[in-house]
Amino acid sequence: MRGINLLESAKELFEKEALLLPGLYVDPEVFELEKERIFARSWVFLAHESEIPRPGDYVMRYICEDSFLVCRTENGEISVLYNMCRHRGAQLCRAERGNTVAFRCPYHGWTFKNTGELIGVPYESEVFGGINKREWSLYSPRVETLYGMIFVNLDPEAPSLKEFLAGAEWYLAFYLEGGMEVCGSPHRWIVPANWKVGAENFIGDDYHVGFLHRSALEVQIIPAPYDFLKHGVMVHCGPWGGFLIGGFPPLVHYPSELHEEIKRKLQPGQVAVIEKQLLLGNSTLFPNFSFLVPGAPYLTIRVWRPLGAERMEIWSWCLVAREAPEEFKQSAYRAYVLQFGTSGTVEQDDTEAWSSITRACKGIVANRIPLNSRMGLDCWEPIADWPGPGTAYPFGYMEANQRSFWRLYFQYMLGT
Image (cartoon, rainbow, N blue to C red; front, top):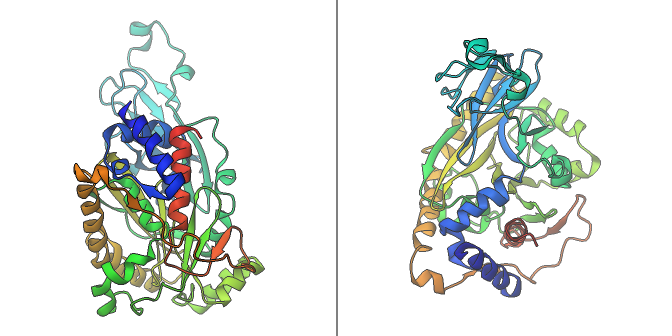
């Protein structure tokens, strides 16, 4: 009950005063409720299709503690299978990636195709007297793909992915319509921080860049002036979250032929945004899937995988244009590793800050002091002629998208 009481008090305070209770980041009962009420009901990103290009390829991915196998079947389709044998519950596969048409349980030898179908039971007739294999296929959640991105939802009653994303797809087309592929394996590392801190940061916190990342700005790891994001555009687009659009030409680092090819595939309104030299800077799709285009020739996507109230595993992918020259791809990957890889220069700043937030929110005093979520509240009028969906504001330093995140968070957690 402590978790519910905290959530109800936090929601009331947030709705009345746009303040947040620190306990939302560290309370273990709240975290257990998040697993049931958010991650068991939301569309969660698992993998990109380019990670499993050949029939038989698979990768292992996670939703909280649950393990899933994302497979390319023999007919080229995508299947997602819960990584648990239907006999006695042993983990079916231990390898993080590989190629196989079937998975055999190491405990008793039950064998399943990469479609989930049970095809082998040792001593079947002797020990079971026969078994209806169709009844014992591996569990497979709902699967939908968008621009090569593979999402799953554990709730059979949830709206479709496209219904949930609504206007977000318009913005995702900027960098995904031309065709992207994963470069290298995803980086992953564990941080002693709450998953929501990362999600909030990427949804539109460009206020921190000139301060936390000042050393990177000074040595040109981020090639931009100190407050280059101050006059960006923040777009709130539906209940799922939003985008923060900053001040780099979005395709400036692309080869010219790719630049023109991507523009040909976009709608007139999307081209208008590009011609104004605006960049899809960073965003979060609720609950824990984030995008970042840092003004370099790559796109990085993130999953903030919850491991506990005070612990998360960060998964980070580098995506590059599929049709780009190989030399371009290698250069893009090097830039990604330098900036946002596991030990990237900019990455180290963020993870230390997020860890300190989580540590501070555990204190006795922290429970008595709410956090300010009012930045930009009632300060700016929306852009009247914005060509895309959603509400756009002509200033980058505000928290409209974070407030949107928390409204949806309380809706999932409390059903209101």
